[in-house]
Amino acid sequence: RKEVEQDPGPFNVPEGATVAFNCTYSNSASQSFFWYRQDCRKEPKLLMSVYSSGNEDGRFTAQLNRASQYISLLIRDSKLSDSATYLCVVNPASGGSYIPTFGRGTSLIVHP
Amino acid sequence: EAQVTQNPRYLITVTGKKLTVTCSQNMNHEYMSWYRQDPGLGLRQIYYSMNVEVTDKGDVPEGYKVSRKEKRNFPLILESPSPNQTSLYFCASSTRQGNYGYTFGSGTRLTVV
Image (cartoon, rainbow over all chains, first blue to last red; front, top):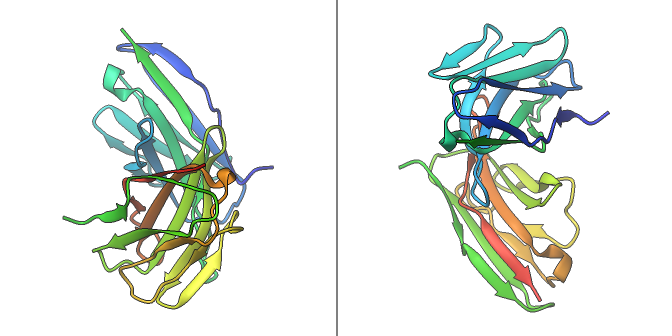
């Protein structure tokens, strides 16, 4: 099993739709989690951290389910500008090294 | 402005001609890393460094070298580039534990002919 798995998509949704992505991870002791957004041929940019209690930033909601070992990203009222690839990032447990593991990304296409 | 600066943004070179891609961060981050990104393969880690003079191989280190003589700089060296190293390269940095996420440079698009 891969350490971090994402459905590559693409998710093709109309403007205004609600869309959700999941990301599963294999290391049950993982400590911190993030969602990144990457536009075509640009650098990944931090979208939001994912906390155990869940967190919301405007139209975006991130949640962590430790029992089932996945994180999710929910986008409400999708905009054309939300079209991008969304990467999940999982930080391992302690032990002296904190080498992040990146998912391969989920592609989102929002159409008019 | 807190940032990671990579240079050059674009580079076309010939097989076997040594090149260096520079990476510099101004956030006093301990952790720095190099990734390559190819279609369908996601980000693959080449090398990383947890601090000055401390470097380790990532998943795809063959054909690359790095050095960390100063905290802010982490250059990527291709001693003898080959066409299979044609890719989009990103440098990233973070605090040691990465609790606040990772900051990426703007990327270097390398073509080896």
